[in-house]
Length: 182
Image (cartoon, rainbow, N blue to C red; front, side):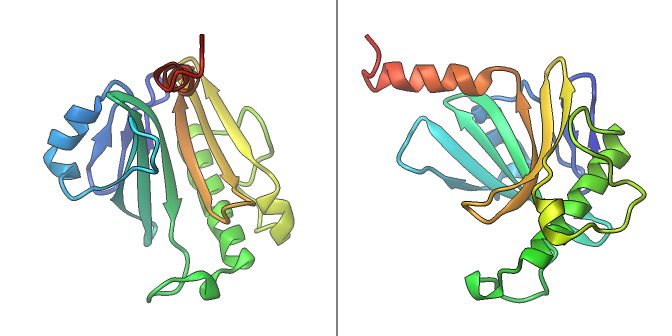
């Protein structure tokens, strides 16, 4: 896996790549993303697409991109460290989530170097579970940021890229569309 530090383009282990300039239409029309599952949460024109990014070090990478209409807002990526088989909440484990966070942190440090904000895990053993999950990491670039963290409300552990102020622009556009701004 690679992340271009100059513009934020992501190249997945399976060869798929996403540029920050991609539109939703271009994403849909790209053959490699044809099988991506779309999901909207009742807030159109926000829409999400989930797809496989292939395997890195034997771990399956799952990715979810978020668009606001045609604007690419962000991407979240997570490695599945759970045992093979069907997953449900009865299988959930903070220990596995901690290992996933550590995997993400090491992967990002190998790609991007030491984080701008947070500590370094590159040559360390896995720290205590809570300490790993409580420690978000961030890399800042002119085009946006890369982060690694754990969502304590939703339970998921992931890393991702945000592109500049696109989320803020989408937020205000959505409020205008809903008539919540005068």
